[in-house]
Image (cartoon, one colour):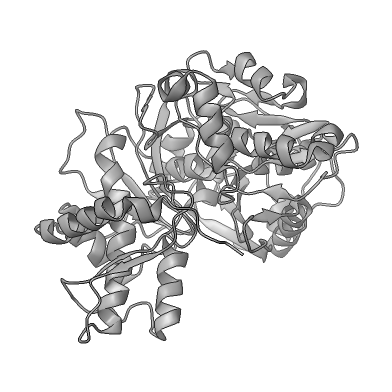
Length: 480
């Protein structure tokens, strides 16, 4: 390993499918070592993972980093949001974690919204209207369907909380991740006692919310390649970590193309959208991160490509076919029971046209929420930052360009969630704003694709099919 210019830090990205660890030079942002290990997700109606898999994957990823991890002075964990982790009195999982893309709690989401003052109440109180992805709805589902698990639960955590607690021995979270639970009041930045009482969750079971820039603890374990006294940062949710990793300034739009698709921007105004399209999350610094999320993004499009026997780049232009790729239900628009829908199929429709239609359907959902995410005074000519696993795909890039009508910048830096976590860890050592650390590292640098005329015809056609098909999309389907 070549000599580092500054202290080393570790940034972790514990995502849906795997956990990655980067050892980063805090002075330059250079990645000096990395590791990665997978975990599994159940299939069927639920989406669950045993949290111990996350820990095993983190340990494996850190050991792959070798001596560099031992030299690190601080570590931070970015993790998938919303997951419900229930622990017993020994800190062991009571049951597998219910993940963000587990939509079984859609009935509880509707009921909670109705029982506690409606959408306006929730938006003003928590910043968001409950959706099936949110942790509060999963807790309500668990109380209804597995009351014995609720009785056995002595601590409730989010995925990043679970890993941070395994590192430090202390139950902590941060404002960014906790803002996606549905039981944290964004106005007072505290747990909402009325909501907790309504769902029967004792606040004593919840972790302490660590402030931005505060140390969450130190590594207390001897089975990891960390030296004694390594600082542990608060960590945060994956989207807030990616925003840190990009060093995003207020008003700059970000589109992330991953297992889920998201659009977000940093704002200095506390968001509250009663339509439920925009989640009013906090960021990891002290500002806000209004965000809209779709459940179906790269995995859904790749599945369509696999069904057609095509490479994911084998798209062909077409104007007659519409595909709404809601393979896992959908969150934006809020259609948790929906399945995929194809309209306009003809004898001469090609597989490449069908695949392009899948891309169009996925991007349409994200762009529909972008204007709601951005503040009114945001510069609409600002390049859209395109990140995530799909961002380097030519078909994704060209679809976003064509349907957005704005320039697109593709940062060259990879693993932005882990880099954001590393920037947060570096901030503990230097006293800097983590976003400023990332800007110093130049993580957002990358080619800018010039804007093209927006394809209004395709946007209007998809919107029309979506409107006409509403009764079908809202009808529950057999998920076997």
